[in-house]
Amino acid sequence: MKSASLKPSIENFFKKRAYVKAKGKEIKVTFYNHPYQNILKPLYQSVSAEMRKAGYSPRFSWLNGRPIKIDFK
Image (cartoon, rainbow, N blue to C red; front, top):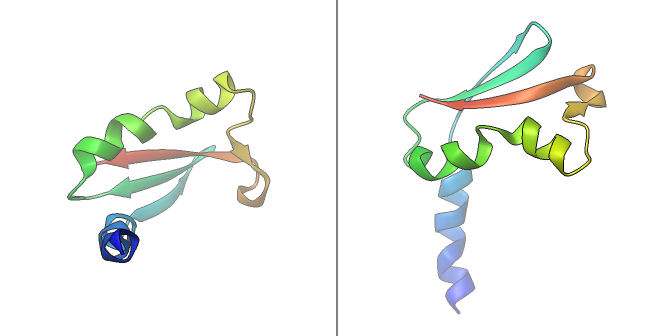
């Protein structure tokens, strides 16, 4: 029963709009005034570095080999 009540919260958490721009050699994703930016920013701020540390390439083939940079403003 609890999972049913959590579903709207989780959907609202991820259904926020973002500005996406191919900038140079990276794809920049910017969230403006996200209600959970204080939680998300530390998790996504260094996502490329964390991927490298885990042994994964931060570059995505379907994005022409560009990494994604996520920012919150």
